[in-house]
Amino acid sequence: MILLVFKPNLITMKKSCLAFLICYTFLLYSYKNYNACDFAGTNITYVLKQTQKALETEKIDLSKFFAYKAINGIEKSKEQLAACDCDSSKKLIYKGLDNLKKATKEASLFTSKEFLNTAYENISEGYKEIEAHRFHSNQSPDKLLAMNSKNMEMVIPLTLIVDDSIQKKIDSILTTYEASLQKVVATVNCKEAKAMASKIYKECEAELLKSNLTETKRYYNFRTKEITKKALNQIGDCNN
Image 1 (cartoon, one colour):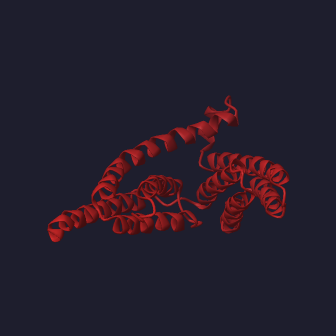
Image 2 (tube, rainbow, N blue to C red):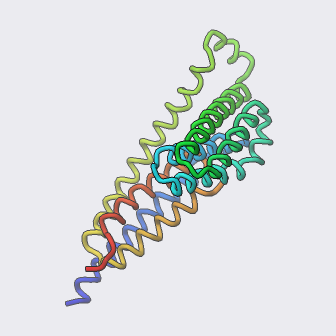
Image 3 (tube, one colour):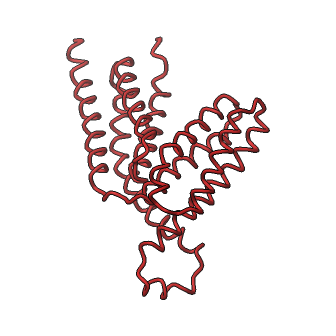
């Protein structure tokens, strides 16, 4: 009877892993490689997310943890920032880096968040500079003349519309993964389910720390991590 119970569970686990691998492989190879400015821009979106997390938490140690992640993201982006050749963005982002480092040295959460707020503003402005620089670099003189009546504030949302459509596609793909993972939670032995989910969660964590991720891959791993974290919370400690 034990074998009969666990055979379907193992099949379910394999199907869940297969769904994850198919989704992951599809997204890895479905989009073109970006240039230096694209790489820098996508890396900075990660930095902004980590800085935002550092601002949102009320625990000083956790705030510093996210701040260090943001610092690491900028350090790994230095080569791309240099190759992008946008001095204004580089200066702002490095200013943000300096404020992030100051935030990690503070014992007071309040003072630390003051530096984090300034860092977020610096890096956010730097990101806008990269987007503006990237936009101008990709436009022909005729296209630039056609758009000369629009200010650069209109440029940023255009990229966000594209990102939003990609995010919706990824969310749609991940519904299959989420459903498979829920089956694992409901039917597979607790420790086995936790081991599988933990492995996927750690893989996503590792991917998000990479400096060469496109925004698409970063969002994919971010959402997969969120879904998997939810499943891990459902699984619990497996003590019972």
